[in-house]
Amino acid sequence: MTGTDDVDGRRRWTPQRVAAVSVVVLFVAGWVWLISAQAGLPVPFAPGDNPDRLEDRGFAEQADARCAAAVEVIDTIPSARQAGSRDERADQVETGTAEVEAMVADLRSLADGVESLDERAILAKWFADWDQYVVDRWAHVEKLRTADEDASDRDLAFVVSAIVGSGIYTERLDGFARVNDMNNCLIPGDV
Image (tube, rainbow, N blue to C red; front, top):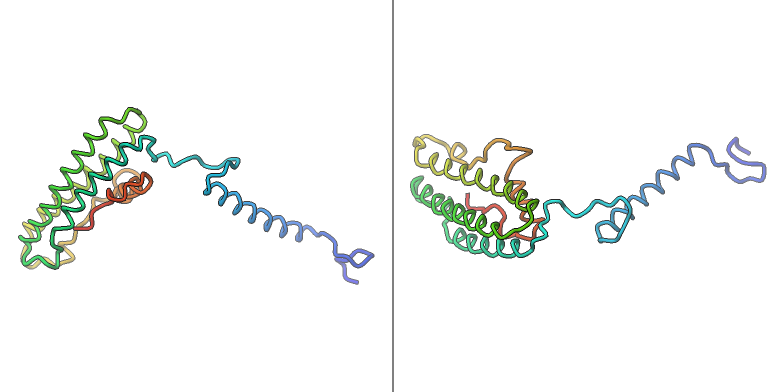
């Protein structure tokens, strides 16, 4: 007989065994809770819906449609590899930037119909990020137009502004679009 066996040959519950079983039970319970919460089942202490999810689905649908129209235009613009010169590439990026700028203006007009003040505040932050993106695109056009012939491709790459607010704004733009099922409103891939 070992020191962990009772007189009848069964193993005793040592503090280590209780701890190990507790960890396993908590781990399994956590996964059950998480999967249940993701499935939308009512579970205690589950996080609510994403605070960036708009209740005004009409705005989200209209915005996605407007963004889809912008994507169609931007998709017709040749890629950087197809540009014959830096000036030609600057013209291409300028065309795309003008389309993004028009899209953002139209999205702002659509947002005028959103009644909730909380949702308007969320949209104002989204538009501020779009504004920064447009500023960065115009700066890229300028960089392409004024670059020396010696400038490397790396020097001419599109660069977003340093961290603005609580992170890189392009991640917030895309995250908001995804949360609201506006996949056409993701950052265009033309630059």
